Amino acid sequence: MLSYPSKQKNNQLANIKFILYFCFLCLFFPLSSLFSDKQNIVYFDPDGNLRNIAGIQAEGNKYFQSISSELNFLVIGNRQVIKKEIENLQPPIMLVQFFYYLDNKSSLHLKPHFVFLSEGSITYTKKVITMNQDIQSLKSLDKKIVASSLSKSGFKKLLGNVNQNWRLLTVPKDLDAIMGLKFKQADAAIVSNNSLAAFSKIDPVDTKNIRTLYTTKEIYLPIGVVTKFSKNDKDISKIFLSIKNIKQSKEGKSFLEMLNFNGITDDQSILQKIR
Image 1 (cartoon, rainbow, N blue to C red):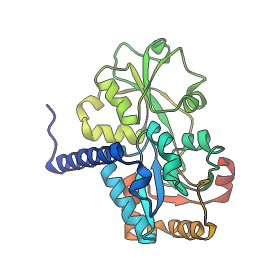
Image 2 (cartoon, rainbow, N blue to C red; image 1 turned 180 degrees about the vertical axis):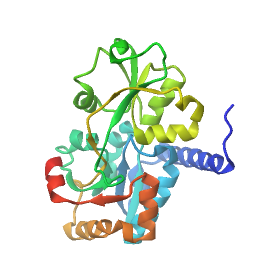
Image 3 (cartoon, one colour; image 1 turned 90 degrees about the vertical axis):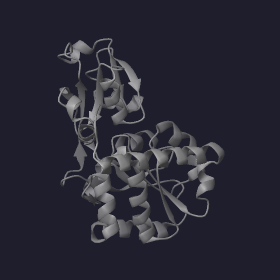
Image 4 (cartoon, rainbow, N blue to C red; image 1 turned 90 degrees about the horizontal axis):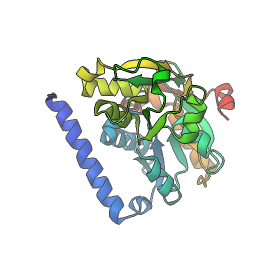
């Protein structure tokens, strides 16, 4: 049995309490009714540090309310929930995974304003990994179960050229895909380095059994976008001006650290490529 330091236990208990409380509220109230007097800023990134949803939620709210008391930051960790609730929440600003942006840029009129940075880079990769000693290459995955948090379109864009008749198991987030490997519900998983790092803290023993079969092409890190729900361009401009200086505030630095990023860029040449 694994043992954890007390701090990790407390973090896990806080996450469980937050999720149970959040689910209870969602059961009886639409998400939009919880924050009807505020503008919602929604964060959705299945590749992100969703092991600590409560921490991201708390630090995000501290940061955005330091900009304006009218802002509410909301983490959504499930693709089905965000699909169901987006019209109710009507967020004028979203921080989203690149593939979510590609899938919804037309329907939600998404306009990129910045990209997060990790160690100065605007991109990351995902890896096809396994713990199964019988699987030595991608060819070994023919008709095998591969767990992934990618949407169907995201999977096709990223791995359509190497797919060997895999049986896809769609999960809410990368960590779930790795857990699928651990408990032998999947033969392989498609995950980010960020998620592998999070798993290594949860289970350093099984982490040693992970092998990489393939590394994908570069993917843009999460993007800050304006949506079709934006009503006041002046207010939105003020928010993005504050975000541009995110590293100059204590709350901003803490929020970035919680997300495992260390800055943002609004370089127009980069944003033009994304558009």
